[in-house]
Length: 257
Image (cartoon, rainbow, N blue to C red; front, side, top):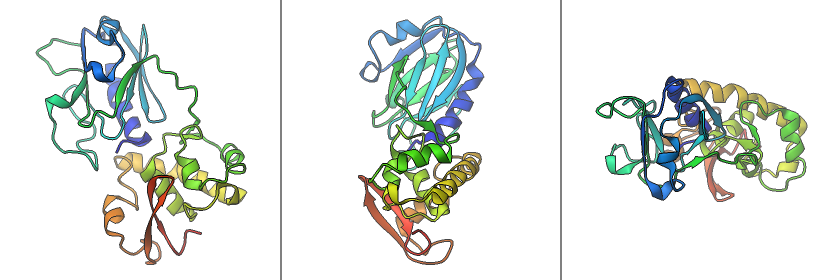
C-alpha cells in the first residue's frame, strides 16, 4: 500500500511535467471536487512536491493534491514508476482510472494517470495539509521526543500518526522499529531519549535505502516475512504478529525491547 516512500517515487516521476501546460483533463467526479477538470485546464505546471503521503502538483493556479489511499498509483507519460503495489491488483484496468491530465496531443498517453481499483484515494485542489507533522526524512530527535514524552499510546501508533511524523506508514514503521530494537507496543513515554535518537537515525538512513530500492516493501520486514513469520533475520528469534492501534505489527521477540 502506498506510503511516503511511494509518494516520493511518484513525485520524482511527475517532475518531468514541470513547465508543461495541462491541455485537457478528465476526472472521476466521485473522488474529486466539483468542477475539477475545468479548473485545471490551460494551467502551467510549475513544481511537484510531496507532503507526507500526498503528492502536490503546483500550477500557476490551484495546487492539485494526489491522495493515494490504499491502492492508488500513478503512471507518467505512459510509464509506471512502480509497476505493482503489494496487496493490490497487478491489473491495469482503464475502469480504475480516476484522473487523466494531458499535456500533449490527445492521441498520446496522458502525462499523468491516477489509477485506483478500490477508490479509496482522491484528488483535491489546494488541500489544507497544515495538520501534518514533520516529514519522516527531517524530523529531529528532540521533536519526536517532545511528542513521545507525553503520549501513553504505543510508540508505533505515535509513529503512524500523520500529525506527528508525516509519510511514515505501517510497513516503514515496523522496519525502523526493527532496526532501532524497539518493541512496537512500548508506550511512547517509556521510550528513552537515547532510544529516540537511535530511532530517528534509523529513520533517516534506512528509509533512504528503501527509497533507492523501490519503496516500502523492500525492507527486512517485507511482505513475505510478514506473511510467513520466519526467524528474525538478525538473531533467529521468533517473529510475532500483533494488532497495535488497529494495524498489524511484525516484530522480534528478542532484540526489540
